Image (cartoon, rainbow, N blue to C red; front, side):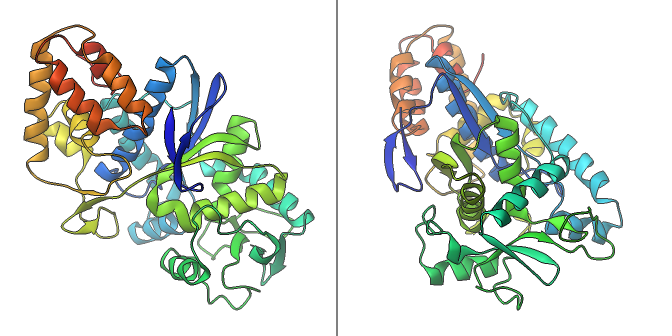
Length: 371
């Protein structure tokens, strides 16, 4: 199987052992899940299906970031407890993903479940000389880690720009370097706080995923780490640096990122409000298979824009496949397409062709489309 590796910046072999360990960054549960989220999780779902088809066991962890700046801000606006907000949105997300037929994650831990693990990991980073305390916080020192920037490949100017956009606060006067990032921070008076050797506070965003990935998969090194392309920097860059600074081992063998889904020329996102919701599509009567088909017609590395014609076209296409009936027509072609950098558009095209002459149910099942 060949997959694009973000860090290698090339399509290279993906060769996990009998058990393929995977971690995909989950939602921050402060608002409903949308098609942009679903697109990423469908990509990793299809990857797991093909890996299982090839004989691997897959263990995919998908976390919930139930404490960070975004969810605390939203809970404050709504006047609710942040964990109540998280619980309500996790329930909606889980319902949507189940309706789409996603393989159940190996585990779905919350960041708040890992405070002890996070404190221990920060302690290791400090002990190894890659972090410092200042202003009541603990910062990762990027100047001490030669590999910083290797995941994204960005230059310093680009990293500073993205850090500012994503809450990295390069202007923080307590930082030795504007690119240094928070591992532990003091909590505001109305925010949750946990005791630590560095004072009461809460974890930074990046350290949560490192601790959860290594704890849930019981290894300092995982086969594949996924997420949206907007997470390459700073989130995944910082994850990689702090994890390797703590363990001394490679953190991720293969970095895989899902391109953004757009609407009206902008990235589909909660902050912009330009969203298409999975549950709305289901309420409109579209089958889960049609939603999957509409999404998988696009390659995971290609940005694409939502169109109102997408779902009617996908529904008609699915009807054509179903009419072809049961059978294994197109199975070899779909397998070959998925092994070629998870080329789902080629897989869909192969199914269209195969459905002209035979049943395609087995090939469609590799895309998670069951009938």
